[in-house]
Length: 383
Ligand code: GLA
Image (cartoon, rainbow, N blue to C red):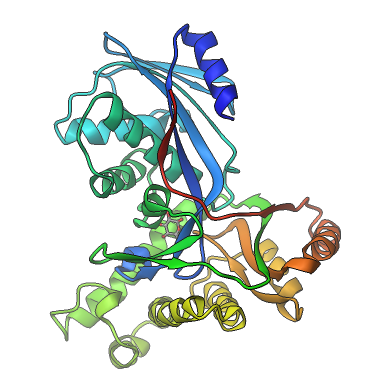
């Protein structure tokens, strides 16, 4: 990928670029908790977005996306979201930097990568992180990783219209080889937790579907959680997010008022509790206990938070009673994308064959399979 992107860049712009790489992520546990000021446990993977870039002396911005074989040109005085999706993730970052008062000049940029799009592995966050990291470097903005992460997140809010939490950008930027990141999304304090899976492999099954209600439902879930908080805050003014809410409070003030809001909030509170246990499991390399929690999370996402879909449920149900699978659940925002599975190393090939055939037969869809390794976060990798 590195050689390829450099070759494309030199052919398009007749000069040598600097290249940056930012990874996609998985999440071991803690789904839909980040925007509720809860905990998450993501890790960066060996699939990345690459950005090759050089500074220009004028205001022009020339973009080329290898994936789509498509160019886009604008200039630094005209940064706004457009109808073509992919430039928005790049320009959204420029917009955020400009709003913070940074002076960004023109640049040439080629983007490419191997994170499957719409698979729940955060290809968009990886783009935002690669771009903010690249611009920070070439325009010498002096921003730290901790400062760049919320900028990248805000770019997604404003130019992609998804009010995402901070997990994806944080994981892409702060990933560490063979470690998960236990992140407190309220304080942004974080701790690396080594991943030792004693005989198990992390394998992703991509449903290869992305139902288009994903972003609108995402924003709706966020609002429903906020509604739960505001009901409780009427009685407990100190409550600012679901992080401050106990199950008892939820039962007292929400259960009798709105059963849908109750279900949503219940899932989030339980998921936060589960995550703390999952970190202990991981520290003890207790893969079976960790896996059991993953199945519980999927159950909550399917029935209480209602962000799963039949393709994801099929894949989780298929492995549920398999002795060689410690755990499985959908990963990311939902409504399609991947399941994450902890599978005994020596049976992976056989299981992949079986589940691929079954998925094709039942859903008439092709399953994609990725055995992932855990890698470092955003980095300069060439030039
Ligand atoms: C998407 C969002 C994240 C997070 C997950 C669900 O990936 O971008 O911020 O909310 O969904 O856990």
